Length: 177
Image (cartoon, rainbow, N blue to C red):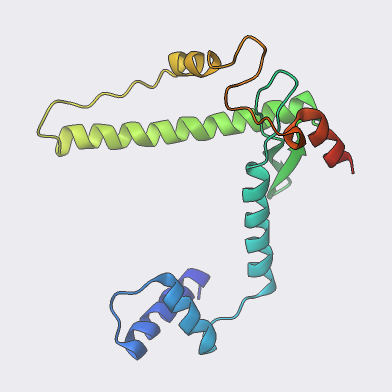
């Protein structure tokens, strides 16, 4: 039985034993653990920890010498034989080919999101919209230009942190230690 089928079975058992038909997944999880219906396997714990690490790495930013706020860590998916894995690289030490691949993969994710938005938009307009058709522009040139114009003449963003601990040189020193 697949893991997802096991999880659905646990939810059905919860419903039967508690009589609840409306519940949160946290309620079911607490019940399942307390009643010995589920226990974390090492692979589940490792995956959860890896997911939490990825979330934390994805949200790590620094201020570069020009005042921009780039991500410090970048993920790139690679294949080795039949296996696929995600490597994390630091923007300050990554090779150009690593950063190029990581950014191209993120760009493809954005395109995928835009494609889904267009599918949702077209379906809504054609099937459910009784008013004026909604139109969304998918050319982000003006948006990027506007965001870039918020950088001041001195090269620092209005939202750039002023605390010395978040300056580029300090981040470099912290990562080296």
